[in-house]
Image (tube, rainbow, N blue to C red; front, side):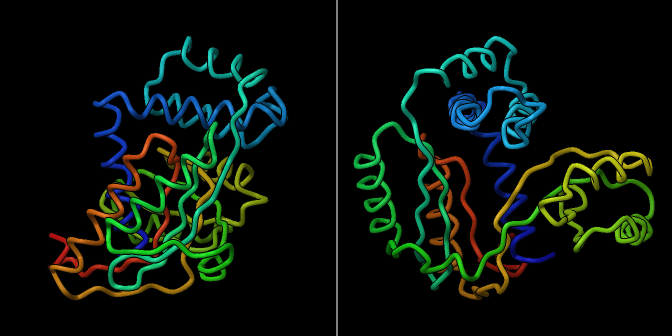
Amino acid sequence: MSGHSKWATIHRQKKTTDAKRGLLFSKLSRAITIAARGNPNPDANFKLRLAIDKARAGNMPKDNIERALRQAQGKLVEEVTYEGFGPGGIAIIVEAVTDNKNRTAQEMKSLFDRGGGNLGGPGSVTFNFEQTGYLLVEKKGAVEEQMLALIDLGVIDVLESEDGIDVYIVPTVLSQVRAKVEEAGFIVKEMSLVMRPKTLVSINSPETAKKAMLFLESLESHEDVQEVYSNVDIPDEILN
């Protein structure tokens, strides 16, 4: 598994914990609200459809989803992106939604400082990431055969992860490829747009690895944060 696959697995586990604390619904609501400002019709707004699909996958009640859509008409929130570095020199992208940019920026700076990292300027790490369509496909039977079959459907890359098969797709054809994947009999557990690292930074020190994971988790726990992407690569023996 690649470092991104490991972080994606931890990322999903973190969201399960968030849901237990009630934090996930708040984050999902903000994602819906910001996406709906462009166009409140999910059939004509791919980003909104993704946000609603994530909310449903997170067992968010229908009333909460409809409330978030209504809030889009008047709530002044905006998307902000932060870039920087963490322990071991790992590159990090943080995507957030906020109603107070100054407050969120100060809190992000504090989290980076306390976590042993530092914020960078726009473009300081994004050159090492590329936006990619992503599907999490359920594993069943012979995994290698499944992966080969998925490659034949026109995907960019496939990787086995703890939670399934990570499938990467050109963003502009994500919906079309998902339809092909499901027509081929695969079960899609998750669909999103992600920032995938082009190169990974390997951390072989248990102490540094622990600092990096605690730092990433602290960013994930912030209420304004929607997504955290990193190019961290931690060997299984250290991660475990």
